[in-house]
Image 1 (cartoon, rainbow, N blue to C red):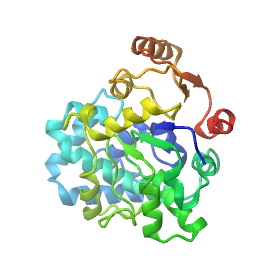
Image 2 (cartoon, one colour):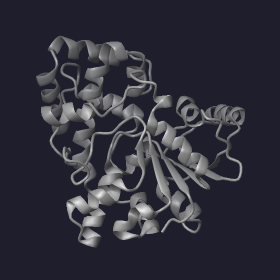
Image 3 (cartoon, helix red, strand yellow):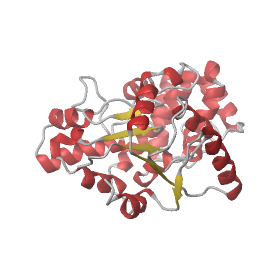
Image 4 (spheres, rainbow, N blue to C red):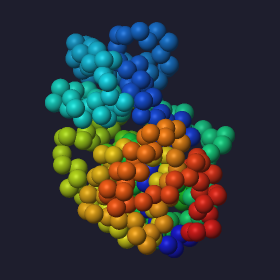
Length: 309
């Protein structure tokens, strides 16, 4: 069991081993889920998303969204929608939901390597008392793959019912700072099953759970407050698959959080030297230090954290 107060901060790279796209990949996949454009080789799930979105929004609105998104200079769909929330908020959220619901079907397959969910589950090893672990998960991802892994594991390993497993997973703080695709079976009365078809009903309900950065003051949102409180109380903070966007870090550190007397480690893959220099300068100005480790999430947990928890 994890007995030392620990926070995992997850970025898109943490879900990537489970077949979910990174930020730039999600933008391209959303484009493929929109009608028109040069996307003749759409996957089945992308075509389903096209059909679903076409049943919800007028063709001319979807076309305007696609043309604007094709021309964006932003690196991610989130950044684009943050700048264009007045024009494309509802279509954008629905397109994200339709795209990621399609990915959930593929995510049900076990990854061939880099399965860090099982590494952290082994550390928790507490059955239905999973909430007694001193662990908080803070995620910028919309997908629910971590919760689904825990839910299915508890059903298989403990003989739990869906309700028992759902209640156990709910007892573990998992904070989706930008929203999620919705609750899983056993967690609330109205749920969206993992891997469900991206039909009109599921897409519209999932889209309601997604937050666009300018539609509310997320810095004062309760989940951000809870995240900062958990970080302040933590002895160990691990950034997994995180892109270290300055704006995302700024929101987490808004209350003047510092890293003194904490172990703060983070995976670092694909960041260029100039980007790392800018990141170090930003962290120095914030009074926060992260020790970076060149490893994927699974190797990071095995090599640096297994004996510490």
